Image 1 (cartoon, rainbow, N blue to C red):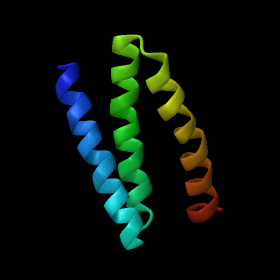
Image 2 (cartoon, rainbow, N blue to C red):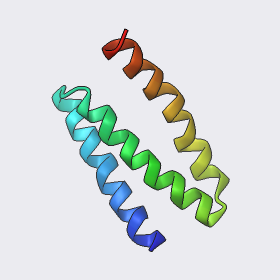
Image 3 (cartoon, helix red, strand yellow):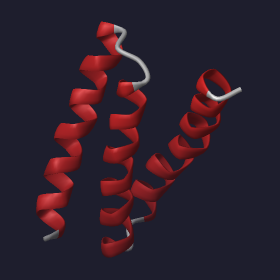
Image 4 (spheres, rainbow, N blue to C red):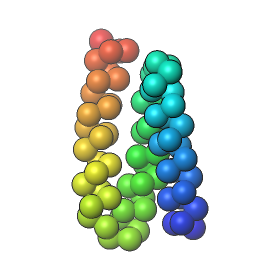
Length: 72
């Protein structure tokens, strides 16, 4: 199951990058958060701290900016 989540999350992150380059916001960030969730799950299941160190801070960057840009 974890392998499927890993590859699905990788594809989702790549799709988010395409949306980012195309300037399609906020959908690029929302898709990125979905990919981050998958990779965070993989990091916890594998007890892989490098994966968690890469993806968990992205949530702390993306979520506050989305709130600032679209809700405030």
